[in-house]
Image: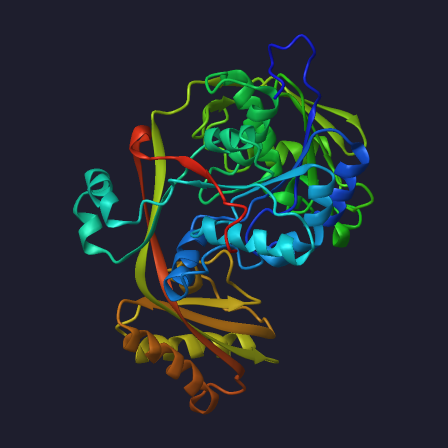
Length: 460
């Protein structure tokens, strides 16, 4: 490992991101890996596949099957590029372990053997899962009696980059994590490559913001940015995924995979830099408090933007924990109305549902007339005069702790076929178990973060 105190400066580190959430495009990694190989030098490939409730859904899958609970698209994401990554010493770091990192690691080991590869050195980062009974006193101390009145599905702490860095220092080619903070997927490789201390706040903050630019995949390359006629993005259908070049001080240049669509510009980087930051002067992460209030960005060339001027402050003493629990049932029903007076008929149908289901608090949307900007209480719908929309999809939704009560909405929407108003069709109904979330902070030293190397000789 080359340290930042070495006489010969460490080479810049390339980190490419090939997923920004669970369910992202599975063909993104190919062009990223091609570009990393072409550029040469030390490189990592990261996949960010967790959102706030993704882990709860993964935990439910693990309950049903002890070998499940990790990213369901793991095979599609990794198999096409695994051999090339291992052959070209591109190491892989991801949170696609979700609720079962060990099972994900075993799946990757099995995948490598099926591809005729030597078993890779795989590290599994653990400690984030606080859903067991042993952790209830810790959660109760923060959340009080609320913990006793819920049916918990998952509880996970947002851990940082230190265990990732330690695993890489120990020789891991692939690091499989559960709930680590998204930017930490980039901070860990940078810590290991450059030999940074865990209290090198400025460098950690700079790498954190590089990770923040990477973590949402194609967003920084124009994906979420695109708005035709106002913010045009070329070849959006083939939008590329980002690659960060990080130097020994943590400053970075953001680009994208070669021969792909999209763009990396001052505007795309500014938007992503501010995305989800509650306070630009104090972005709280498990690794550092990052401050971008004096950040500077510069367009160096087409699709190459430099970020400098980030500074850091000591990391928080606490870690954030998300607790997901069963929240009853969500019932949804839809029916379409078209032609003259379609909006009036859709509004009448909504009135019928409300009168027949007085025990349910209905959310009503008139898709094609008033939906996205509406409110759960229906105030905007009630105070907005009926228009003349001729193509309206009525959506009614309600939640209830009792499944039978929720199912009543499905039957009533279906009954609109013949019970009126006129011309309704295309009914679709769904009933989904609902997850609710509680959040709290716990002392950092109460979360036992660790990594373990998967036994290469173990049966996958």
